[in-house]
Length: 461
Ligand code: ADP
Ligand code: MG
Image (cartoon, rainbow, N blue to C red; front, top):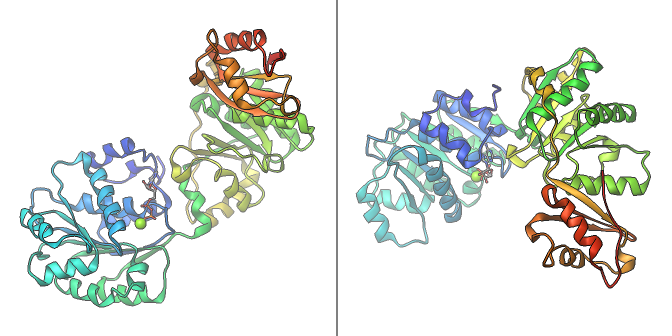
């Protein structure tokens, strides 16, 4: 377990169990930094760029603290606009799915006033709103904050920019001094320090720097004694996780070939990509990787440049990159916000210094994890989901993707959903099809015609 695991937090089981169903496998950097502090009850200022997952950070804090049986407004979340308040309320309701009867109410300007009064009479645990409207309800006595134990200022920089300062002061005056206050912001201008002095109690400051966004990806580190162990480690990680698309980054061309040879021996579909491949071989390698007929690409950084794959399941660093920036760039190729991506880095004694630099960069301690056990080595390898067929006609023969798809899916052919990516080059074309229909697809294309002429087709091995 590392400190990006939600399991490292002492959350109510109802909250924790719901997280993976929302697709949240690992904490983002701001969540990992903020949540332990929030759950400890301290006042916290957290600055992290847009999209870094701040809502879940305070949302879990608010919900963990909530006592559902106490029917009173216990938390207030203030946002600069109605859209943002609606988003936050939606996220809170999603997070609260595993806890019974949590009532979240939004109070925003631009919405009819009367119905909000009615909803307030029915009561709520959590209010999410914009400052103007919340203040109005307070002033008119519709809303009481006597039982409030948590205040969240979301997008505080924008609220201050929009001139909500005095309104915020008026709201804060109506709530107990004894409370927890959290402030979230994408930037950290002086005004934030000023207001935090007024409304917070000895706040701690957490800043997640832009260039550290890569730390939002689940990273694991593994210690290896020598190169022999290193290759075996790559193999174990691949056999354990069986990614559809993984890149193994090597620092030298020789390493790419050694690693690829060993993986091939273990029956994995793998291609070594290095600077000395000719253009044709390189094109074909990239096509097969992109259309998922090859699961593993072993590459140097230079060779991987321009690799345009949207979704890598896994990145493995055979050695730690020479430069921390390159490391960040490598692992940044896996899923966004840790959605799916996994970054595994192998290191030995001679790379201690590089590890220290990464620790300094991410301001986190790196602790090696145990590798998957040797038992995975006896598994028979795994095959990619797709098979790639190569046709001997391309742009020069006026072949377009629709022609290939049409030829494949005619009556006695294969279903459209079995056909994957199609790439067309000057004098050849590639089409990926699901493994179980590969032979059928091959026969169909051979028997038919494309643009009036028959084509030669072969499976790429
Ligand atoms: P911010 O408020 O920092 O701009 P949000 O809270 O709006 O960012 O989150 C941005 C996106 O990241 C949302 O779509 C959210 O669902 C997603 N997200 C948040 N936390 C996680 C996580 N731990 N794993 C995966 N996705 C997450
Ligand atoms: Mg936000």
